[in-house]
Length: 597
Ligand code: GLU
Image (cartoon, rainbow, N blue to C red; front, side, top):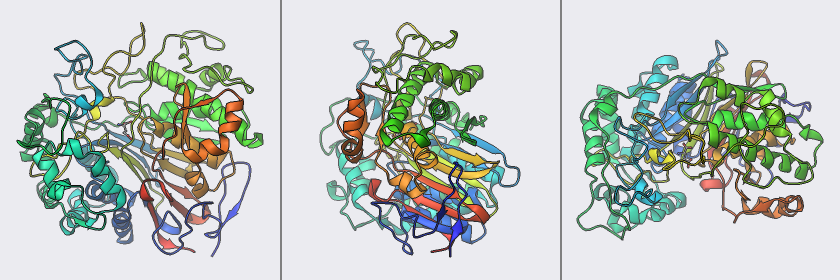
């Protein structure tokens, strides 16, 4: 059966399951794979087990929020190096009944005792090396993931949180097959994991990364989920699990006979029971920007995702990309993100006043930034941030560098009632801070390393320095795009600061460059975050490098892959195209309740 997709651009295409298979991607129609088309609800995650759990919840009459929580809890088991109850994230929800987009900020927060100097070594007054700060108690923020699930379940779900944790607990008990990505993630972290008894017992069985094809069980995590299911999240924030988290942070469970060498002392942190007891999710208004007749909703502070994506879209909107050659369009794309990152770095942090955020994603600001783009010549990077108080084509103000990361996971869920969830969750680095809470089966985050360790903005204030109870700036960009008030597209991805550029690139590919959603997902990626060279995947560099270099762009060394996105596009008459990565991070899995091939 075919169904018609009304595209949000000027063009209208007719797609079927045959034509949605992306170029260069495996066209798997019936097996679980990266693309699924049909009706009645959809799930897309990076992992087949998590997608199956989410789909099962939908099939049994649960809604998108129920399915998203159950899938996320499962990702905590099968993708433990990217996400879990030791971390945080941002949940964006479209309510099919009211048409309202709302968010949950479940970002980790720093301890009450955190200061601007937390990441400065008192011995020499210099900032810690990133790895030293990461694998320490200093980097652990109060986890917000469980509180996010509870808030979402209470506000929009139809099932008790406990029942949504049980399928994940069963997966943890039964075990799941180790794949090449999982094994590699352990291998990459072997030295850090080998320092801690609790971590190496779980992830380095027999002292080595688990073999591909072996079954990994996590009975401690199963028990943790079941304890929370039975007795509530108080077990985590005020009860015995809180005590174990605090103990781990204050007295890292360093092995007497570590496996492998670690170059740094493992420092304790100062997270207290009162920090966990006092943790609350926030409900910031989503960011909102108009783009070529669509309305793009994103995540506001402490994430910079919504404003950075919104500002870049507004800059791009000043040009009709549908008439541009690929090189012209990509030139605009990388120039817009360089400008947007300059402003993000200078102005966006946990406490940025709302009027500043509003200004950054206003059309007027975009005009004052877009005027710097020369269609024939790349700007010299880094570009300075704009001056919010000036008029005309913004003069420069002082600015600073950028950061990056490669972890995290994302999921997209929709149900038959029109509800949509876009959810990005993380423990920061792949492997978090490398400490499994003994007896509890989950890794702690190192999210506080998302703060700038020292001021980066010259004589101007840095919006992202650490502070008491402060949440570090994020790049996570769960995004829901509406057309005429109804969902058109939901998308998100991991990838540290490249999250912003990957979400933007998928949107531009889909909305402006005539690609289907699976094509937009599969297309080679590049990320310009206001550094000298564009970071890109080899296929992008090969295809577009010469054209962009002719305009004066330069390239940083290639990276194997950028992001691991998930998305759902909404067609007429309730049709859905669920899309995951065909290849990146081992490929993701999309599924729909009632497939149509
Ligand atoms: N901690 C990062 C952020 O919040 C995400 C980490 C990653 O995706 O690598 O922006």
